[in-house]
Amino acid sequence: MSTRTSSSPHDLSGRTALVTGANMGIGAAAAVSLARRGAAVLVAYLAMTDPEDDSTFPPAYREARARDGSQVVDTIRREGGNAEAIESDLVDELAPTRLVEHAERELGPVEILVLNATGWQCPDSFSGGREDQVGRPLHPVTTDAFDAQFAVDARASALLIAEFARRHAERGARWGRIVSLTSGGRDGFPGEVSYGAAKAALESLTLSAAWELGEQGVTANLVHPPHTDSGWFTPEVEREAIAVSPLRHYAQPEDVAEVIAYLCSPAAGFITGNRIQMR
Image (tube, rainbow, N blue to C red; front, side):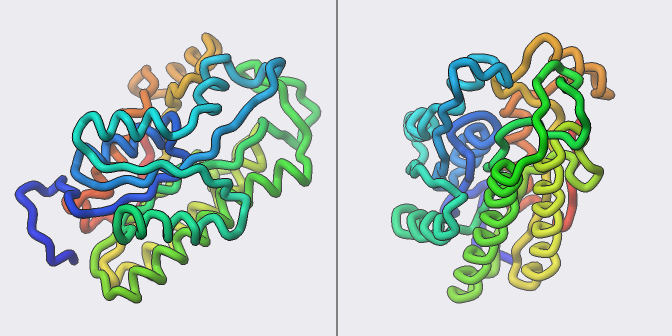
């Protein structure tokens, strides 16, 4: 348990958070939400440029993927928070160590790790179908797409957790939070088989961290968001999202960010090893 005292069970003042995939969507919203609770935040991102003729996502989503982290940092700083942005390709096996070092040098020791980045490239499938249920073109499983997916979602996540844990132990820290974003990996993911497999690996890594790091005051949990509109919704996706939700609605990134921020708060000190299913 932390020795720090706070006037609020949700206060993260004096903590440093590292959020991956934080230039858009859930990652960006999580960075802002943590900063509003007092954490200094390293906004890690990789700007992605999609081909002009790519029909996988609407233009708004492609535009969001191409952003750097400056908008998120500007939002945090305008509200009086502390944030830095850094572009990093997590396919590089040295990137996790560099990210943690950068955060520690610029903001302070990382006590909150939010694993949101993904190496997703396209919907892939074992079947010969041409489109998924919302009209996106399906692709066959390939070495390049599979390896990129696992390099980010699994390998980089494992290395980030390992670096986080090593430094945590070296400084004798007694408080830490790890939150990973998942999406149905353990149940399989028809139409996105590489993505689902990589998320299943991430789930296992996170749950292992919960058991192995608990004695050091570190909690580790998974958040499985509902369909969340990060700019990729089409009318077909919206209908699908509403149909599969018991609440008959879909989420905005800020809705998911609130759950992430709660799990990172002192109030969630006895929540660990869980997969939080949002609907």
